[in-house]
Length: 92
Image 1: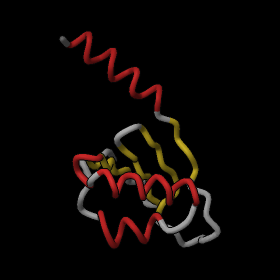
Image 2 (image 1 turned 135 degrees about the horizontal axis):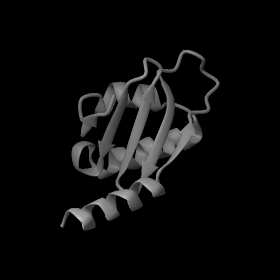
Image 3 (image 1 turned 90 degrees about the horizontal axis):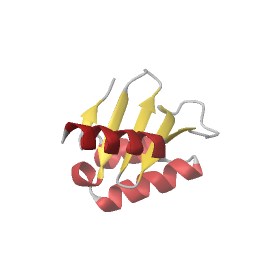
Image 4 (image 1 turned 90 degrees about the vertical axis):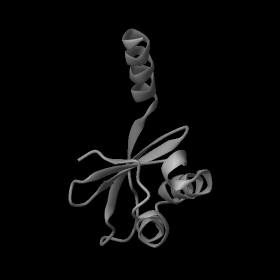
């Protein structure tokens, strides 16, 4: 069981790629993000990293966060107004 889990976890990690959050707003709290099929991880300016999942924040919220992250606009505001405390885990 552990070997299978490790294999699946390694596969999941390979599917995630870190993207710099490209925005014109120099005051944004978000500096980078990673997406996978069911989640998004957000790295903030203070170095903290939060994982939001379909289960913790909802499918619609994760979809919107991915859209805003790709656009480079509005992600920090969306997190603050809608999903701030709905993270699955704080990674750092």
